[in-house]
Length: 314
Ligand SMILES: Nc1ncnc2c1ncn2[C@@H]1O[C@H](COP(=O)(O)OP(=O)(O)OP(=O)(O)O)[C@@H](O)[C@H]1O
Ligand SMILES: [Mg+2]
Image (cartoon, rainbow, N blue to C red):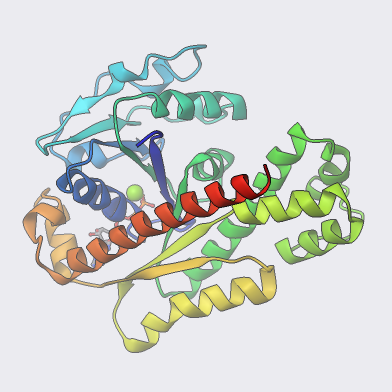
Protein backbone atom coordinates (compact mmCIF):
# COMPACT_ATOMS: atom_id res chain seq x y z
CA UNK A 1 0.00 0.00 0.00
CA UNK A 2 1.53 3.31 -1.04
CA UNK A 3 -0.56 5.42 1.30
CA UNK A 4 -2.08 5.06 4.75
CA UNK A 5 -5.80 4.78 4.80
CA UNK A 6 -7.53 6.84 7.40
CA UNK A 7 -11.07 5.94 8.40
CA UNK A 8 -12.96 8.38 10.62
CA UNK A 9 -16.10 7.46 12.52
CA UNK A 10 -18.47 10.30 13.37
CA UNK A 11 -22.17 10.90 13.08
CA UNK A 12 -23.44 13.73 15.18
CA UNK A 13 -25.37 12.07 17.98
CA UNK A 14 -23.86 10.80 21.24
CA UNK A 15 -24.18 7.21 22.39
CA UNK A 16 -25.08 5.68 19.03
CA UNK A 17 -22.14 3.25 18.90
CA UNK A 18 -19.30 5.21 17.25
CA UNK A 19 -16.68 3.87 19.67
CA UNK A 20 -18.12 0.36 19.42
CA UNK A 21 -17.81 0.49 15.62
CA UNK A 22 -14.40 2.22 15.58
CA UNK A 23 -12.83 -0.11 18.14
CA UNK A 24 -14.13 -3.31 16.60
CA UNK A 25 -13.30 -2.20 13.04
CA UNK A 26 -9.75 -1.60 14.25
CA UNK A 27 -9.60 -5.12 15.68
CA UNK A 28 -11.13 -6.70 12.54
CA UNK A 29 -8.55 -4.96 10.32
CA UNK A 30 -5.75 -6.11 12.64
CA UNK A 31 -7.13 -9.66 12.50
CA UNK A 32 -6.93 -9.46 8.71
CA UNK A 33 -3.20 -8.97 9.16
CA UNK A 34 -3.00 -5.21 8.71
CA UNK A 35 -0.99 -2.88 10.92
CA UNK A 36 -3.62 -0.71 12.54
CA UNK A 37 -3.65 2.39 14.72
CA UNK A 38 -6.79 3.25 16.59
CA UNK A 39 -6.83 7.00 17.28
CA UNK A 40 -9.22 8.15 19.97
CA UNK A 41 -9.98 11.74 19.00
CA UNK A 42 -13.10 12.02 21.10
CA UNK A 43 -11.32 14.84 22.85
CA UNK A 44 -12.79 15.32 26.28
CA UNK A 45 -14.57 11.94 26.25
CA UNK A 46 -11.88 9.51 25.14
CA UNK A 47 -12.39 6.03 26.55
CA UNK A 48 -11.06 3.48 24.07
CA UNK A 49 -8.04 2.89 26.31
CA UNK A 50 -10.31 1.54 29.08
CA UNK A 51 -12.13 -0.62 26.59
CA UNK A 52 -8.82 -2.06 25.37
CA UNK A 53 -7.57 -2.64 28.91
CA UNK A 54 -4.82 -0.03 28.59
CA UNK A 55 -3.92 2.00 31.66
CA UNK A 56 -4.54 5.72 31.55
CA UNK A 57 -2.14 7.09 28.91
CA UNK A 58 0.54 9.42 30.20
CA UNK A 59 1.28 11.34 26.99
CA UNK A 60 -1.36 13.60 25.63
CA UNK A 61 -2.08 14.86 22.15
CA UNK A 62 -1.70 18.45 23.25
CA UNK A 63 1.99 17.76 23.91
CA UNK A 64 2.40 17.21 20.19
CA UNK A 65 -0.35 18.72 18.18
CA UNK A 66 0.76 22.34 18.25
CA UNK A 67 4.33 21.60 17.15
CA UNK A 68 5.81 22.14 13.71
CA UNK A 69 6.94 18.53 13.24
CA UNK A 70 5.15 16.52 15.87
CA UNK A 71 6.72 13.20 16.79
CA UNK A 72 3.44 11.37 16.97
CA UNK A 73 5.10 7.95 17.26
CA UNK A 74 5.75 8.69 20.95
CA UNK A 75 2.00 8.62 21.50
CA UNK A 76 1.61 5.03 20.30
CA UNK A 77 0.47 2.60 22.98
CA UNK A 78 0.74 -1.14 22.33
CA UNK A 79 -2.35 -3.29 22.97
CA UNK A 80 -2.84 -7.01 23.62
CA UNK A 81 -4.16 -7.37 20.09
CA UNK A 82 -1.56 -8.30 17.51
CA UNK A 83 -1.07 -5.49 14.99
CA UNK A 84 -3.21 -2.95 16.87
CA UNK A 85 -1.83 0.13 18.58
CA UNK A 86 -3.66 2.99 20.21
CA UNK A 87 -3.32 6.76 20.28
CA UNK A 88 -5.46 8.14 23.02
CA UNK A 89 -6.93 11.60 23.33
CA UNK A 90 -7.60 11.03 27.02
CA UNK A 91 -6.68 14.02 29.16
CA UNK A 92 -7.09 16.33 26.20
CA UNK A 93 -10.04 18.58 26.26
CA UNK A 94 -10.39 22.26 26.68
CA UNK A 95 -6.76 23.02 25.85
CA UNK A 96 -7.05 21.71 22.32
CA UNK A 97 -10.66 22.58 21.75
CA UNK A 98 -9.74 25.47 19.47
CA UNK A 99 -7.24 23.90 17.13
CA UNK A 100 -6.54 25.71 13.92
CA UNK A 101 -7.36 23.90 10.70
CA UNK A 102 -3.69 23.86 9.68
CA UNK A 103 -2.79 22.20 13.02
CA UNK A 104 -5.35 19.50 12.39
CA UNK A 105 -4.06 18.95 8.87
CA UNK A 106 -0.51 18.73 10.16
CA UNK A 107 -1.56 16.22 12.79
CA UNK A 108 -3.30 14.06 10.20
CA UNK A 109 -0.28 14.11 7.91
CA UNK A 110 1.92 13.15 10.88
CA UNK A 111 -0.48 10.24 11.49
CA UNK A 112 -0.11 9.22 7.85
CA UNK A 113 3.66 8.94 8.28
CA UNK A 114 3.35 6.33 11.02
CA UNK A 115 4.10 2.71 10.30
CA UNK A 116 0.55 1.44 9.73
CA UNK A 117 -1.76 0.28 6.97
CA UNK A 118 -4.93 1.65 8.50
CA UNK A 119 -5.69 4.38 10.99
CA UNK A 120 -9.17 4.30 12.48
CA UNK A 121 -10.27 7.50 14.19
CA UNK A 122 -13.04 7.54 16.77
CA UNK A 123 -14.64 10.97 16.86
CA UNK A 124 -16.76 12.56 19.52
CA UNK A 125 -20.42 13.43 19.24
CA UNK A 126 -21.62 16.70 17.79
CA UNK A 127 -20.64 18.86 14.86
CA UNK A 128 -17.84 20.96 16.35
CA UNK A 129 -15.20 22.14 13.90
CA UNK A 130 -12.69 19.65 15.36
CA UNK A 131 -15.00 16.71 14.77
CA UNK A 132 -16.05 17.80 11.29
CA UNK A 133 -12.50 18.70 10.21
CA UNK A 134 -11.01 15.36 11.30
CA UNK A 135 -13.93 13.64 9.57
CA UNK A 136 -13.27 15.51 6.32
CA UNK A 137 -9.52 14.95 6.43
CA UNK A 138 -10.02 11.17 6.52
CA UNK A 139 -10.07 8.96 3.42
CA UNK A 140 -13.15 7.00 4.47
CA UNK A 141 -15.81 9.08 6.16
CA UNK A 142 -18.04 6.77 8.18
CA UNK A 143 -21.14 7.82 10.08
CA UNK A 144 -22.93 5.76 12.70
CA UNK A 145 -26.65 6.41 12.86
CA UNK A 146 -29.39 4.69 14.83
CA UNK A 147 -32.95 4.41 13.54
CA UNK A 148 -34.37 7.07 15.84
CA UNK A 149 -35.56 10.53 14.77
CA UNK A 150 -33.03 12.43 16.92
CA UNK A 151 -30.08 10.48 15.55
CA UNK A 152 -31.33 10.80 11.97
CA UNK A 153 -31.84 14.54 12.38
CA UNK A 154 -28.34 14.95 13.85
CA UNK A 155 -26.89 12.91 11.00
CA UNK A 156 -28.46 15.21 8.38
CA UNK A 157 -27.08 18.20 10.26
CA UNK A 158 -23.67 16.53 10.39
CA UNK A 159 -23.76 15.87 6.62
CA UNK A 160 -24.82 19.42 5.82
CA UNK A 161 -22.24 21.05 8.13
CA UNK A 162 -19.48 18.78 6.83
CA UNK A 163 -20.29 19.56 3.20
CA UNK A 164 -20.37 23.32 3.81
CA UNK A 165 -17.13 23.10 5.77
CA UNK A 166 -15.42 21.15 2.96
CA UNK A 167 -16.55 23.72 0.41
CA UNK A 168 -15.30 26.49 2.66
CA UNK A 169 -11.83 24.93 3.09
CA UNK A 170 -11.48 24.01 -0.58
CA UNK A 171 -12.50 27.47 -1.76
CA UNK A 172 -9.64 29.00 0.23
CA UNK A 173 -6.99 27.45 -1.97
CA UNK A 174 -8.81 28.55 -5.12
CA UNK A 175 -10.02 31.92 -6.26
CA UNK A 176 -13.52 31.21 -5.01
CA UNK A 177 -13.14 32.42 -1.47
CA UNK A 178 -14.84 35.73 -2.20
CA UNK A 179 -17.83 33.90 -3.69
CA UNK A 180 -18.17 31.26 -0.98
CA UNK A 181 -17.36 33.16 2.20
CA UNK A 182 -20.39 35.49 2.26
CA UNK A 183 -22.69 32.52 1.62
CA UNK A 184 -21.31 30.31 4.34
CA UNK A 185 -20.78 33.07 6.82
CA UNK A 186 -23.11 35.73 8.09
CA UNK A 187 -24.30 37.61 5.03
CA UNK A 188 -25.71 34.75 2.90
CA UNK A 189 -27.33 37.11 0.33
CA UNK A 190 -29.01 34.29 -1.62
CA UNK A 191 -30.55 32.53 1.38
CA UNK A 192 -28.65 29.30 0.76
CA UNK A 193 -29.56 26.82 3.48
CA UNK A 194 -29.05 23.33 2.07
CA UNK A 195 -26.23 21.66 0.13
CA UNK A 196 -28.66 21.52 -2.81
CA UNK A 197 -29.07 25.33 -2.76
CA UNK A 198 -25.31 25.74 -2.74
CA UNK A 199 -24.71 23.21 -5.51
CA UNK A 200 -27.38 24.81 -7.73
CA UNK A 201 -26.05 28.29 -7.09
CA UNK A 202 -22.43 27.37 -7.89
CA UNK A 203 -23.51 25.38 -10.93
CA UNK A 204 -25.40 28.37 -12.30
CA UNK A 205 -22.28 30.55 -12.08
CA UNK A 206 -20.72 28.25 -14.69
CA UNK A 207 -17.06 27.96 -15.77
CA UNK A 208 -14.52 27.09 -13.09
CA UNK A 209 -17.21 27.17 -10.41
CA UNK A 210 -19.05 24.27 -12.05
CA UNK A 211 -15.82 22.28 -12.26
CA UNK A 212 -15.14 23.13 -8.62
CA UNK A 213 -18.49 21.86 -7.40
CA UNK A 214 -18.16 18.66 -9.44
CA UNK A 215 -14.80 17.99 -7.80
CA UNK A 216 -16.23 18.70 -4.36
CA UNK A 217 -19.10 16.28 -4.91
CA UNK A 218 -16.62 13.62 -6.01
CA UNK A 219 -14.58 14.15 -2.85
CA UNK A 220 -17.46 14.22 -0.38
CA UNK A 221 -18.35 10.58 0.29
CA UNK A 222 -19.92 9.92 3.69
CA UNK A 223 -20.96 6.35 4.30
CA UNK A 224 -23.68 5.41 6.74
CA UNK A 225 -23.66 2.45 9.13
CA UNK A 226 -27.03 1.89 10.75
CA UNK A 227 -26.60 0.57 14.29
CA UNK A 228 -28.91 -0.81 16.99
CA UNK A 229 -31.42 -2.12 14.48
CA UNK A 230 -34.37 -4.00 15.99
CA UNK A 231 -37.10 -4.29 13.38
CA UNK A 232 -37.63 -4.60 9.63
CA UNK A 233 -38.84 -1.02 9.65
CA UNK A 234 -35.57 0.09 11.31
CA UNK A 235 -33.58 -1.59 8.52
CA UNK A 236 -35.23 0.58 5.89
CA UNK A 237 -33.86 3.78 7.46
CA UNK A 238 -30.48 3.42 5.72
CA UNK A 239 -31.88 3.32 2.20
CA UNK A 240 -34.41 6.03 3.10
CA UNK A 241 -31.60 8.34 4.26
CA UNK A 242 -29.70 7.77 1.04
CA UNK A 243 -32.79 8.68 -1.00
CA UNK A 244 -33.50 11.76 1.14
CA UNK A 245 -29.89 13.00 0.83
CA UNK A 246 -30.09 12.66 -2.92
CA UNK A 247 -33.49 14.34 -3.19
CA UNK A 248 -33.13 17.17 -0.69
CA UNK A 249 -29.36 17.70 -0.58
CA UNK A 250 -28.28 16.54 -4.07
CA UNK A 251 -25.61 14.48 -2.29
CA UNK A 252 -24.73 10.87 -2.99
CA UNK A 253 -24.39 9.07 0.34
CA UNK A 254 -23.49 5.40 0.60
CA UNK A 255 -25.45 3.11 2.89
CA UNK A 256 -23.05 0.39 4.06
CA UNK A 257 -25.40 -1.84 6.02
CA UNK A 258 -26.80 -2.37 9.47
CA UNK A 259 -25.84 -3.89 12.81
CA UNK A 260 -28.50 -5.42 15.01
CA UNK A 261 -29.23 -4.36 18.52
CA UNK A 262 -27.85 -7.15 20.67
CA UNK A 263 -27.25 -7.54 24.37
CA UNK A 264 -23.82 -9.02 23.70
CA UNK A 265 -22.69 -5.50 22.70
CA UNK A 266 -23.36 -3.77 25.98
CA UNK A 267 -22.35 -6.89 27.93
CA UNK A 268 -18.94 -6.79 26.25
CA UNK A 269 -18.61 -3.15 27.29
CA UNK A 270 -19.42 -4.06 30.90
CA UNK A 271 -16.90 -6.93 30.74
CA UNK A 272 -14.34 -4.59 29.15
CA UNK A 273 -13.74 -7.12 26.43
CA UNK A 274 -14.13 -5.96 22.82
CA UNK A 275 -16.96 -7.77 21.07
CA UNK A 276 -14.75 -8.90 18.18
CA UNK A 277 -12.80 -10.91 20.79
CA UNK A 278 -15.66 -11.87 23.12
CA UNK A 279 -18.22 -12.94 20.49
CA UNK A 280 -16.43 -13.09 17.12
CA UNK A 281 -19.12 -15.32 15.62
CA UNK A 282 -22.11 -13.40 16.99
CA UNK A 283 -24.46 -11.53 14.68
CA UNK A 284 -23.20 -7.95 15.34
CA UNK A 285 -19.58 -8.85 14.52
CA UNK A 286 -20.59 -10.86 11.45
CA UNK A 287 -22.52 -7.82 10.24
CA UNK A 288 -19.59 -5.52 11.02
CA UNK A 289 -17.25 -7.88 9.13
CA UNK A 290 -19.42 -7.54 6.02
CA UNK A 291 -19.40 -3.76 6.42
CA UNK A 292 -15.61 -3.79 6.84
CA UNK A 293 -15.17 -5.82 3.62
CA UNK A 294 -17.49 -3.44 1.81
CA UNK A 295 -15.48 -0.38 2.90
CA UNK A 296 -12.27 -2.07 1.71
CA UNK A 297 -13.90 -2.88 -1.62
CA UNK A 298 -15.26 0.63 -2.09
CA UNK A 299 -11.82 2.06 -1.31
CA UNK A 300 -10.28 -0.06 -4.06
CA UNK A 301 -13.00 0.94 -6.52
CA UNK A 302 -12.57 4.62 -5.66
CA UNK A 303 -8.79 4.42 -6.08
CA UNK A 304 -9.29 2.66 -9.44
CA UNK A 305 -11.78 5.28 -10.62
CA UNK A 306 -9.46 8.12 -9.63
CA UNK A 307 -6.55 6.49 -11.44
CA UNK A 308 -8.66 6.13 -14.57
CA UNK A 309 -9.82 9.75 -14.34
CA UNK A 310 -6.27 11.03 -13.97
CA UNK A 311 -5.18 8.95 -16.98
CA UNK A 312 -8.06 10.32 -19.05
CA UNK A 313 -7.23 13.90 -18.18
CA UNK A 314 -3.51 13.58 -18.97
N1 LIG B 1 -25.64 -2.81 18.32
C1 LIG B 1 -25.77 -2.55 19.62
N2 LIG B 1 -26.55 -3.32 20.42
C2 LIG B 1 -26.66 -3.09 21.74
N3 LIG B 1 -26.03 -2.09 22.39
C3 LIG B 1 -25.24 -1.27 21.64
C4 LIG B 1 -25.06 -1.45 20.22
N4 LIG B 1 -24.20 -0.50 19.77
C5 LIG B 1 -23.85 0.24 20.84
N5 LIG B 1 -24.47 -0.22 21.98
C6 LIG B 1 -24.33 0.32 23.33
O1 LIG B 1 -24.56 1.72 23.30
C7 LIG B 1 -23.71 2.38 24.22
C8 LIG B 1 -22.99 3.52 23.52
O2 LIG B 1 -22.03 2.99 22.61
P1 LIG B 1 -20.71 3.80 22.25
O3 LIG B 1 -19.99 4.22 23.48
O4 LIG B 1 -19.95 3.02 21.24
O5 LIG B 1 -21.38 5.10 21.58
P2 LIG B 1 -20.67 6.44 21.06
O6 LIG B 1 -21.41 6.86 19.87
O7 LIG B 1 -19.21 6.23 20.93
O8 LIG B 1 -20.96 7.42 22.29
P3 LIG B 1 -20.26 8.86 22.56
O9 LIG B 1 -20.93 9.82 21.62
O10 LIG B 1 -20.58 9.11 24.00
O11 LIG B 1 -18.80 8.71 22.29
C9 LIG B 1 -22.77 1.32 24.80
O12 LIG B 1 -23.22 0.94 26.07
C10 LIG B 1 -22.89 0.17 23.83
O13 LIG B 1 -22.69 -1.06 24.44
MG1 LIG C 1 -17.58 7.24 21.77
